[in-house]
Structure formats: structure tokens, C-alpha cells
Length: 221
Image (cartoon, rainbow, N blue to C red; front, side, top):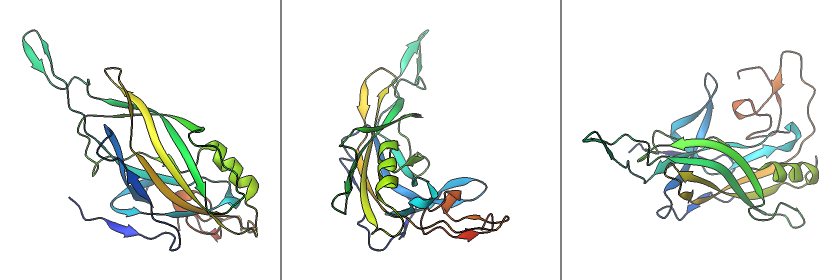
């Protein structure tokens, strides 16, 4: 097992957590740190526990939780031979389901499990979390729109606890749910700076405002 290093993205936000890890056939574990390295990739040996987002950039906070499954291959017999790599233990995820809790009174967010995002991801039996992860956004479309409307430049920042789980089915047709995990993101809004023609807005993996206030930077920095 590789040793994981915590990357503290936002010092004052509560720490992310997962729940019911042992009960679900597919589980989201540590949220990996993202790296802008020939595209956006998830680090193999570092994870984050919280984040921040400058809403002035109209971006969403991208995360990559490690994934593991506890299903097993279901062998079948074909012409007297046992075939184990049948795909009968695969898990197909089709939807992310969100719930939210805001630190500031008066911030209105979608009701629990109202915000849903369709996805398509297949995970094989006995998936190793050291080798597998899933990109997802911390906010569904409804919550992001609500935050962009209610958090304006100069307003007090808001820490939002985003609780996420996935729904789907096995290749044999059985419905499944993942564990729930909670990831905190502190959102705020600045006034967009005027950048030079050869500059871009700052942000992790090219997402403006992700992990800090938006500034003007040189591409690739």
C-alpha cells in the first residue's frame, strides 16, 4: 500500500469523510490531488481533504476519488470449460446523486438528492483503489447555478459540504449504490482581472478559480 500525503487546500474548512464503506459493492475512498501534467491527471500518492472555488470564473470544482469494488467474477461453464473473465461481476454507474449543507444561513441549495448528474462508468470486480479513480464535479448543475446567483463579489465566503453517492447496476441487472462521501468546498467570488493577451486565468487543471482567487498567469504555469 502506498503512503498517501494529505494536501491541505483550505485550512479552515471541515475535513472530508466517507461513510458505510464496508456496505457498498462499489466505494469511493480518498480524493486524489489533481495535477496538470500533459492534461489533467489524478496523483497516485497524494490526496486532498477540502477545496476552494472562485465563482467569478464560472467553473466547477473537479475531484477524483479512488474507487474500489468488492464484487467477484462470476464464472460460467462453456463447452465444459470454466470461464472466469465473463464480465458478470461488472458494476456500471449511471448517476451521481448530491446533497448539500451550507455554512452560511440563507444560502438556498437544492433539496437532498434532487440534484442528479448522469454518468457512465464501468468498474470490474476487485478493482484496486490504488489504480482506479473517477473524475466528478463537487456540485451538480442546480447547486452550481444557485451558488453563482447567491454568492457575489465582496460577499462572505460559504463553505458547502457536498455529499455524493453513485447509483447504477451490475452486469447481471441488480441495482447498486455506492457509499456516500462528503467533500467540503469553500466558495467565494472576486472581480475578474483584466489579463494580457498572452495570459489566462489561474486555476488547478485549467479550471478558473479552482483552489484560489483568480489571477492572471502565463499558460502552463
